[in-house]
Image (cartoon, rainbow, N blue to C red; front, side, top):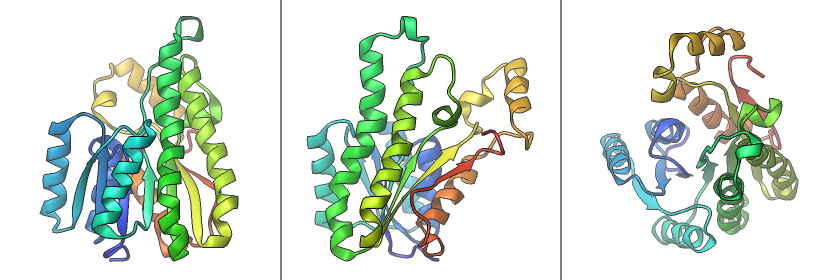
Amino acid sequence: MEFKDKRVIVTGGTKGLGKAIALSFAREGAWVGVNYSSDDKSASRTEAELEGLSTKSLLLKADVSIGADVEKMIGSVLDQWEYVDILVNNAGIIRDKLLMFLDEEDWDRVLEVNLKGTYLCSRAIMKTMIARRFGRIINITSPSALTGRAGQTNYSASKGGIISFTKSLSKEMARLGITVNAVCPGIISTPMTENLDQETKSNFLNMIPMGRFGEPEDVAWAVLFLASEKAGYITGQVLAADGGLT
């Protein structure tokens, strides 16, 4: 169990990809703090699953786009766990519209949660990582950042910003024993994709060279690899777990 007793925070960690990442770390023996913003029911279910894996876990309710919330959240974790080894910046939202119909509020909110949230959480965790000369920061981005997609100018901009942020921060942190990388998930099997009509599913599948949707665990294993000792000489990279989509 390579991650036994490693301390991990996963933002947006109680549903979907974030939950799969959190549970994968827990199965490998890590202590896992899962952040969420509002869905208490999903958070309670995830907490129960983590407890069922006999791992130490924390529920961390906070809006990652608000600096005071993030500082309070990280402070609470450090009070209980002393330090954090791994941060996975997964929290994100989508508000898709063609640019001509995209209002300022939807532009700002997507950038605040996706990009500013990544900045705030990374900044808040850095002191403890620097003090120990060890850390892994893994940011979740999107194919939209690499290829663009109509109706996602705000989302694509936020995820593209995360890639640039990752590459710049990796250069700041490399000499301090801290790696900073990104994972780019493709089209993943979720309740949302399951509810698509057959024609839409077929169109998506035709875009994927491997001919199937990814599973949340496909992304989780990519994250765990970048967090592992085996990836200690890898930093500033974007690992696409997308079946060849990009």
